[in-house]
Length: 339
Image 1: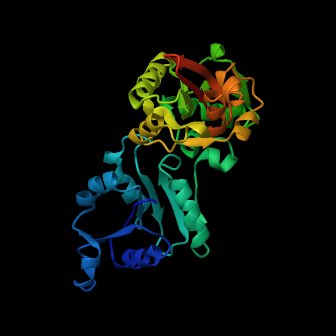
Image 2 (image 1 turned 45 degrees about the vertical axis):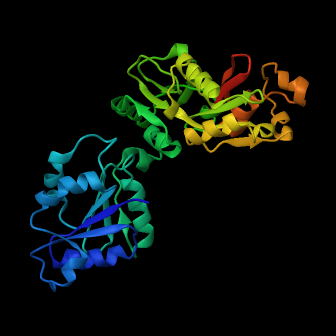
Image 3 (image 1 turned 60 degrees about the horizontal axis):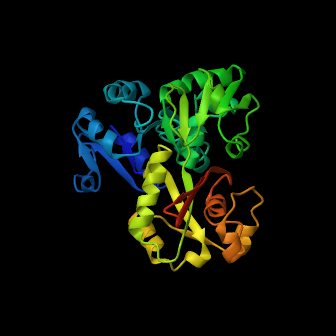
């Protein structure tokens, strides 16, 4: 839930803020000490002397700041606080009648456009003035794709070039995996191999690339198999060898999964608890339903399974695509990765 501040400057804007509060949750209202209302009522609000006294702290404390005052004044006051589009809060300006909404700053990553749309649907006769070109033309915004899936964004400054190319109906090459590409609906995108990246390409991959391109890093889902009695320490050591080999870090791992016969495996359960994974276990039928070509597995001999690590990773993942075939550690632990 967004933490929201509503900033007012006089009695009319304060009265509007009280009405607006009914349409929101988790809201603080800021009121000027010069606003002529009962002093006892002011204890319910955050009272300030000057906007410059409250905005720097509010900038760091709130996800969104809604200003019921002149756009020009808001622009002047927030200008010294601007850092970058990845971290600045959503800034909206709303008129006294609460029927004109302007998402002024951080429309995409900060959520200003989304909050403005929500308010426009709730407030009577409200008009939402979104100026973001990709929204107006219904063009894909890669930062919104990343936000949707909670992906890390690398080289955000390269986004402008990509967005402009799409707005100008020029093609954009996307170096990614088939499972991801098929979910992106945009006619001017071209799927390419990672070896064919150029300056106008977008990379969508959990792996590292020494380039300046816009790079979205999807979360990785790991399937883990292990022999009976494998310890937490052994699984931990195997995982970090896996991460090191593929130049990944543990924060990139969304979750782990395994075969349901491993659901009482103490070492695996302790590992999941230590690293706060909500481990999932899959049945024999689910695992054997996987149609993807998988590596040969001893699980076929012992359990009649197509495998453990690879199918578990695929079943757990968002896009059902295996991108790291199983790695074997100490002849007793297998790890595979999917997106």
